[in-house]
Length: 301
Length: 266
Image 1 (cartoon, rainbow over the protein chains, first blue to last red):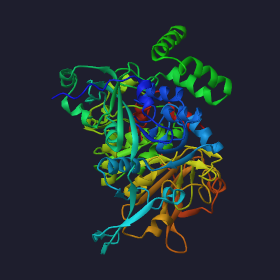
Image 2: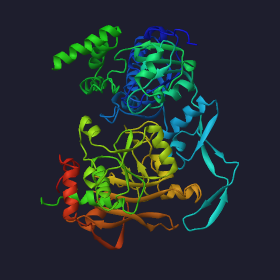
Image 3: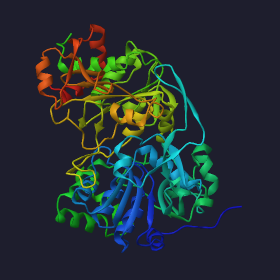
């Protein structure tokens, strides 16, 4: 049977979040970020958040607005602009705490939480300054002997010491998908699901924004069933948010708005630029946001 | 044929780093590394798998089907023969399996091949925040790694790096031979020369060694531009120039001349 109707607005979703929460954000860099939900957080009185993500402008905006206590990331980048300027400033000014993990470690931390395990072991990170700079990370000794051939041809047996990546348990996850039904079955298009399904399962409460809410029967008519990656059973709320990932990429529905991203990067330079950006693109309704973006495109033409 | 530039020499030196790799993922990062890696695939290493830079692995139908760099998104999608779907989670699967040779950049690199791309200064409160660790720790502990440094100077080739992202031979030695059994830093290519890890320190740990200088570069110039005591191979040579066939491939792989922006003529 179909699930309940979980549709909500961005502000209704944000009203269910609390200061101090650990929030996972889907997407990757400046790709398919749930930006309309991020904007709603920026307008709210939430603060002291711990953000877990493959970071992009979501992290930069939240840092710029003083919403963040700690960022746990595989990286923070705008892709076409390699260094996220607001995150960079927050790091250099010491206004946030950071855990910068190897990219693969983040996947394992999310997977561990999604599978309700305390950790998952890996070799990634061993020997690097990830473990020296972030001393809360622990290793674990394999209970099984590894039989390994060494480069000189000798064979040895050893109980390997591996990095135990701790589960990244999230209070809430925010992800953006291309389509969803009203109860939260969601569909990604494009060529990479990123890690949105893992964020959803790693979280106590998961909120899916999408370009369009469609009847359930339209989901498998839109793309191959392998693209139906998120199940309603794991979803708390659904937000219909056309252009909801703007200005990040949401291929094939739309590409990254590079001109807008450039405008965003300027907010790191001065309080005036930030205030101006806030007034026009954050402290507005989603309808106003879309019309302001459309007007900008007209002007740039 | 146009005159051979320093950037062309670098492209060939990068291609040579992938020689002998056979059937695995050639994963250079950055324009000149991509040109070099694709040059290897188009010539002497035809079984390499290539990345499209995003979510698929390419299996070109022949040398002419190896795509150029710097394509627009539409051209990129049109110009690819896909052999495998490779979203990021699959890339982690591939690299943890080890069938990959990555060539990364390095803001700093030391004699053991430790690489820093994360931050300048103390990581906890960096003077300059850079890329973070990205995939460097996991790459270096799991498969072969090489580095490309387009701006060889005492600030990039340093006594010790501020943050160890990609692990070098001393860190690998500390982990022991079993934990580090998949670790290999094969080669470093800079705008001045080519380096391997054929030297050793007092404890027998591999260290960097100059094996060839690019045409027009003196050995002393490289020593001068290196922030640690550089070992020079007894039989240091001149980095080879591209063959006419390779030169034609380089021109085709980089029609916009992006390589010259990365390594200007000296």
